[in-house]
Amino acid sequence: MEIERTNQLLTVVGSKLRGLQGGLKGEHALTQSAEADAAAMAGAAVPSSWRRVSYPTELPLRSFVEDLARRVAFLHLWVQHGPPAMWWLGGFFSPQGFLAAVLQRHARRFRVPVDALVITAQVMPHLQDTSLTDGALRMPVENKITRSRRGSHTSS
Image 1 (tube, helix red, strand yellow):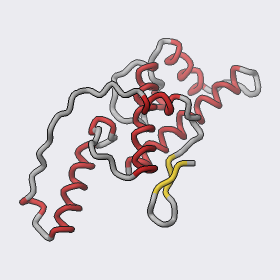
Image 2: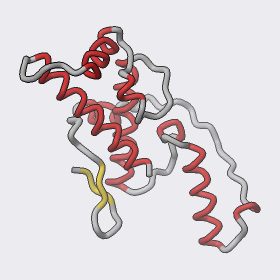
Image 3: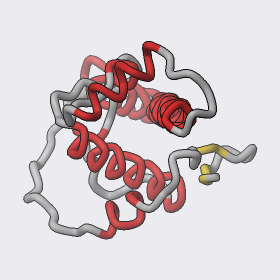
């Protein structure tokens, strides 16, 4: 679910940016939506067309793009290398949904009632590793996170 929602956001961002670019180059007329997106970006705000399919955020545009890049990198590493040892809960569209899925999976696997399970967590210190964002910031918008037929994940 997270991958699909992230891909939907990347698709909208890419489409809106290409449409705006074409309008600014004079290849076609700018739509009202494109003009609104341009005005938002000129004011360092996330366009409303992006917000409609985005995770909840109050970040300004630059921080939003950096945050989105970190989220894509997090999912990309998960797809490429399997589940991480630590989860960045803030990187999910719906952390509550993720945690509910973890409980349900564990309950099914060990045949215990989901109501009998409790999640405990340890908050880790902020990691200064920029390797996630360095690669993600260079990743073109057209890249999507995809799943292979065998159930493993790849990126295109």
